[in-house]
Length: 246
Image (tube, rainbow, N blue to C red; front, side, top):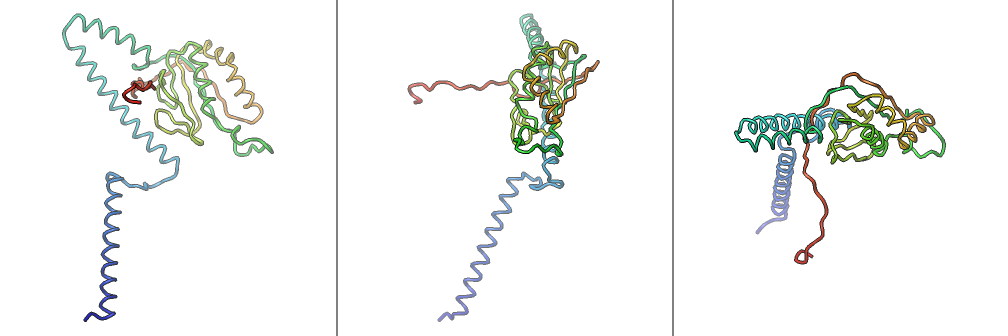
């Protein structure tokens, strides 16, 4: 006949076994999730995490550029008159679409949040930070001023590039960036400066620079080197459901 003590020992053994199984499951889940990397890397502040993610993306983009070059070299080595004509046309379109590196004179615009010391009673704090629409206003003005190529945070912009504001960071092609935001444009500097002066949205931003000390610095540069765009160029769009799908 089992005693009360033996029952207690059995329950204790079962509890210990259950805890060990659960702990093993948690360790396995963590290993799968981290894929062998540290889930909480050293220097886990937001700035370090953003920098680490940006570096990983840049490594992937560098590899993508290398693979694209290999593909281009193989295509050029293939014989065929029609192929040569197609490649020539593709080369012209790549220059226009931002898929090739670019270099030349231009301007650099740097946007920064207002200093923390700025304190205006009753003022919405969102007024004191740079937002997506501010960056987009400068980018659009530069395009309208005849910019041949534009980059943000060193990343080439093309017609399908999305700039999104998430909290106090800006997300560009899935990568978050913190201020200062650096926009570079290749083109005639005087013409680009005129386009900035004539943009209503840029004029409004400059008013906030005067009133609330938002950061704005514009420079004319004699030489800007810009990498080719290395992200995806596929387009996705909404479409109406067919009768079978509805």
